[in-house]
Every structure is written in C-alpha cells, then in structure tokens.
Amino acid sequence: MAVDRDGRDGSGDADVVGFRPLYRQVKDMLIRRIADGRWQTGQLIPSEFQIAQELAVSQGTVRKALDEMTGENLLVRRQGRGTFVASHDDDRVLFQFFKLSRDGATREFPDSEVQSVGRVRADVAVRDKLGLPAGAFVVVIRRIRSLGGERAIAETIVVPASRFAGLEREEPMPNNLYGLYAARYGVTIARATETLKAVACPPDDARLLGLDVGTPVLIIDRVAADLDGTPVEWRVSLCRSDSFHYLSDLR
Image 1 (tube, one colour):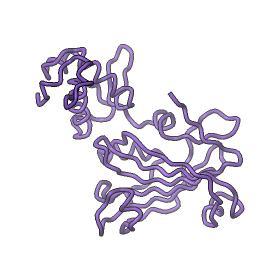
Image 2 (cartoon, helix red, strand yellow):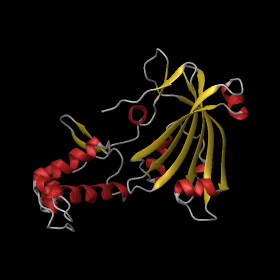
Image 3 (cartoon, rainbow, N blue to C red):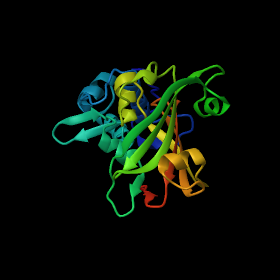
Image 4 (cartoon, rainbow, N blue to C red):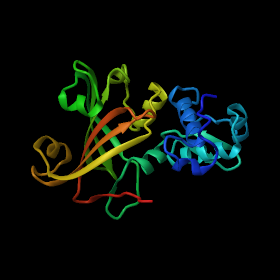
C-alpha cells in the first residue's frame, strides 16, 4: 500500500504540519479506483473489513474514508446491502445538481429538447474555463429544458472533444447527461462551481423561452469537474424567473 506511514490513524495528525491523516490517503486511493474505472458506477464495493485487510489499515480508518466519500455523494450506503459507487441517476442529479423549481410546486426533473449539437474549435473563453490548449476542439450542446410543460431554461453545454469522443453523434441525446458521461465515457462529475447573476434576456434566448427581449432572467454559470478536479464541462443556463425560482439546500 503506497501510503505515508507518518500519517497515522489518529485524527490529531491533521493538525501536524506536513502530515496527512491516513484516512485521507486511503480516501484518495479509493477515489482513484473510481476514476480509473476499477470501481464502476453502481458497483458494490468490498466491505470495510476487506478494504482494511487489503490496505493493512484499521477498519476505523477505512470507515472514515468511506464516510467522507458518502458525504461527497461518491458512494451510496444501502441498508442491508452494502456500499455502492454512486450513479448519476435522475434522483441524484435532481438533488445535487438541478436547482430550478416552479413556484408553488415540488422539485421535479426537467424535460429536455436538444436544439443543436456540434463539434467546434474552442475559443479563448472556453479554453480558459476548461483549461484547454490552443487548437482544442469541444462539443457544444444547445437545449431547452422544461418544467411542468413550460419552457424554463435555455442551456449551452460545452465539453472537451478529447474526453467525449463521438458525443456529437449521440442519438438520441439523453436528458441526463451526467449519467451518460459516467456510463459511456468513464467521466464522473464529482463537483461543480456555480455563479449566479440577474441579466436582461437577449433576443435569441428570449425567442426560445417565449419571453420579451429584456425580460429579467437568471444566468447560472457552472464549471463541473471530474474526480481528479479537472474541469470537464462548462454549462451556462439562462433561466426564467417569472414563475420559477432557484432552490438550494444549505447544510
């Protein structure tokens, strides 16, 4: 096991400069198994005892690593069945990544209508967002998302063509893209950073959403990263705010 033995099981090690707690080293190793595809989406992972025995650490160390991974939605514990690699099913995506709701309605998964898909050379803004080199190609998806039968979001999604070869030929393009990324391309979205801003709706998006030009809307600018922390998607969602709201559970 390639761990730093200066990082011990005790939680006090976190306060020692230069040392990393052993459970964090174990966590990094287990995340690498997901990133490398050794542990697949939806797969039952070995028990705490088996992992501890394999890595020559205590079960308490393994449990702490698994607790953090569960808290970060990388793993799911199922009572009486064991611990599984989390999948980007509709329920998880709705809870973790989709925050727009209709006023007076319960949270619901949106429908999607793809407007266009294409492979183009990344411009400077895209390269900056995704950390791509000059000359890199990206796949751009434009789609409309609806809630309760009403058009609510005009969305532009950009991903590196090198990580998602052939995505532009995906037919039909599924509603749940994060599930597709994991199942087809081995890319798990682990976290995302969003910025929100109120703007006046531009003409093209106003036409798609059935709004007057200049109507107040909310722009959600999201950069999503994989398990290694590498940016793999830039998503700009222009959202109606007349009968919809952004809902975030803070814990």
